[in-house]
Image (cartoon, rainbow, N blue to C red; front, side, top):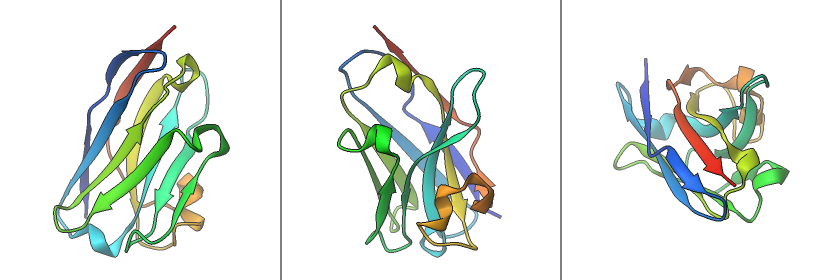
Amino acid sequence: QVQLVESGGGLVQAGGSLRLSCAASGRTLSSYVMGWFRQAPGKEREFVATISRGAATTYYADFVKGRFTISRDNTKNTASLQMNSLKPEDTAVYYCAAGARTGAAGARDPHGMDFWGKGTLVTVSS
């Protein structure tokens, strides 16, 4: 079992930045592909970014390319999502997830992830 706890959400103005962190316990994160997903009110959970176990490969949703950066530190058992140039449409609950059964490409499907945090709310005001 892996326990994931997100932090770093909050209220920010459009154009601002936030850095989300995901702290893991229970097992070393190096065995898992990591991902960030988000869910806005009334919408389904959607893929934001994934990163391979060794951090060599990343994938981003088109709507965050060039603005968000996913990273991980396996020595600290953490993953992060740096979010710049935030837009009101980025408002959502952001979830960290870990997957044991897939790679970074397959992890774009939320059903491919095995462990989830409870989420952290990001609100971007216009």
